[in-house]
Image 1 (cartoon, rainbow, N blue to C red):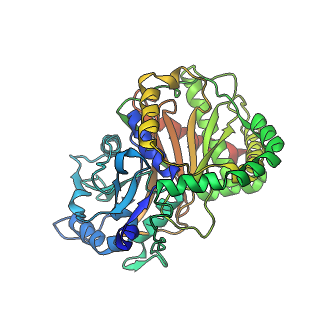
Image 2: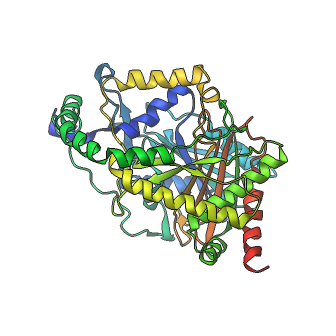
Image 3: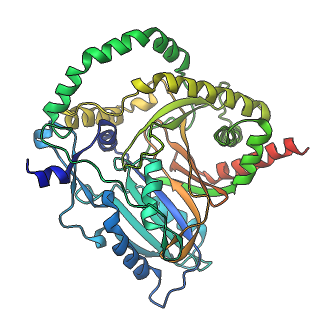
Amino acid sequence: MSAEKARRVQPLSGLDAAFVYLEAAGTPMHVGALLLLDRPRVGRAGFAPHLRAHLQQRLPKARALHRVLQAAPFAMDHPHWAEATDFDLEQHFFAHRLAKPGTQAQLLALVARLHAKPLDRSRPLWALHVIEGLADGGVAVFTRLHHALLDGQGAVALARVLLDVAPGVPVPEHAEPARPAHSARDKGSTFARVSSALLGLPQTLRAVWSAAPQVIDTLRDSVMLAPRTPFNVQVGPARRIATGGVPFADVRRIAKHFRVSSNDVVMALCGAALREYLLRHNALPRTSLVAAMPISLRAGDDGEANNQVSMAQCALHTEMADPVARLHAIAAATRRIKQQVSLLRGFIPTDFPGLAAPLWASGLSRVWASGHLAEKLPALANLVISNVPGSPVALCLAGARVRASFPVSIVTHGLALNITVQSYAGQLDIGIVSDRDAVRNPALMVRGIERAVQALLGKINP
């Protein structure tokens, strides 16, 4: 392999590649963001040409957006990232205009249709949709990026490439860090990766053996089975999306008063909304719902555009009617999760050798889908809830102020509901994605979260 080719070709880690293999189950594995912009000051041509020129200028600094998937020969390793040699912005930039009157319902319906479409794997795995024609004169920008490319924190870091702290003033230090070149005997070689794993096996086994009793006890105490809910179903090809927001100051005030973390409050708000929703539909289980909660394994100074994340189970205590009791129970649960992650961090895999993985991993995904196994096997979680830190100050995109940034995430078979929140400029922006048939009106959950904030504030000032 030449030095130039080694520089341009980068193998996916096992975790990154897993998001590619999971698409064999028929569920697109990209994440998105719906940005609402103030009315831009542009000419009669509209905002789309202005934004296209902005992207053309900034994209050279976003290396991840120029990567394309390249299959390993004979499917004997994970796919590789290679730099696209014929990158064309027009294949990733799309302009839309809502029909009058340009309501929020029209906007979310369009975003749901776009989000349900898989990205074209022959191109770099991202797309940007600018949507004009909103009733208030503003503009929406919907971005889609494949989860194999980056995790939630990586997405925020990548957004700094495109966003400004003020019109024309880029976010400081927004360039992606350089990644080391890979030689033929380095991470890029299947033989080298398998050999490295085998050579390190004795040391790994010794570490596992010494920690085995504590690890086994931790796993036995931490793994839960979730009750069956309307969300634990096979997902179809269509999606529903709801958005909303609550003042982040209210969340912090609740956290400070009850001496819990802001994330504990977020989980409690979601638990309250889910309890209310399921009671309305006469479907609330007697035992607690369980959320799959992403946990970052990323070091604080690590800005690489890849995935460094795992999942933990968190009981939402939806069996409790009292909101304060529920909040304290969730806080106790998350403290245990932190202790468990601290113990298990060294044993949580983010990579695995890719020997024939494109065949067996994709095959397992197809079997999972075709056999409707998510509806037949015990459930480990009812939904995914993710809390992503964002910018504390308002940002600009191509000169227009971003007034909201709603995350739009993934649903999969057995987990037909995803609630993701992101702090932004004093707000906690909420994005809910569901299978179209599993949740008919996800906006009810947004309203439930808003009511849950007021209920906890009422306990502070009765």
